Image 1 (tube, rainbow, N blue to C red):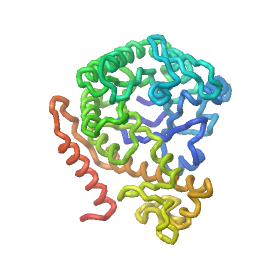
Image 2 (tube, rainbow, N blue to C red):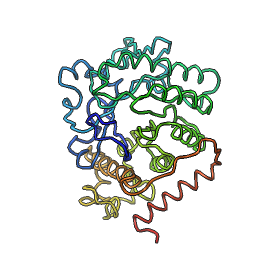
Image 3 (tube, one colour):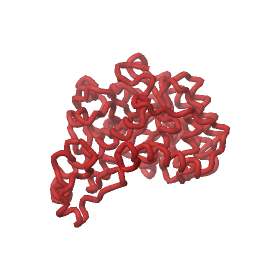
Length: 370
């Protein structure tokens, strides 16, 4: 697959930053380019509300509108079924939302979702799926999975720019391996440009989460992108990469930055803590980003409580850190993983061992262990 995105086999590892109303919170697009970011994610739901997909289309598409020359992905708006469920009514026709802007009803059908994304103009667009939390059990999970398969056919039929935009399907089925397998096979039969694993990171335990990722990545085509949605913690990215995933998205690096928390190899660094007030070290002495080269923890500590620049600096560092994690565990750097066997039911200890092995490689890279 290559529609000018620069994403083609063999894939690297990509972590998408989120675009809300046409911007990444706290950073300019040229800063994202400096960091090495190759792809960003636009929130279709919010962009449709403001500034509207029609205006974005008139301005030449979201790439031009926000001055972003690299790859872009838009979600379907379906995630709001979970995050704004108190405002939504889900039927076979689609999802009716109560707009948080003006309170008016907004019907999002599979066709409308694709039409909005066609107007926004991202390189990768997502099919509308029926999203339910993994902590929900019973017939609702099965209903959502089969509806997701019915909706993908409506999305394919509505897609008017297949030569310019790559439509990805989303695997649903909760934590049920049988339902996940049915959904995977149904989507693969439709020969889509790429596939996402959805409905995770919603409160399930790590063992269940990793089992679903292992099952889906093993059954999805190796020569097409496999995208785990809503995943952004470094540990999850390392383990999911070992299980065969290629792409991720999460607001975690910038959201945690706005609370004054920086990502470092040892974990997190809470820059609002008083102990940082006289610390003359950079956020991460092993990091070569612009922030770590030029500013101390003490300086950023002063900023994060009173000045927006503090959040901007920490966001820059956090995204740089996440890019380094993704690039370090990529085929381009000689790290490859064998395809998991979906018939093997591994215990949680095996997945933890997997995480340990790859973090050990990371520690060796940083020079902390021999």
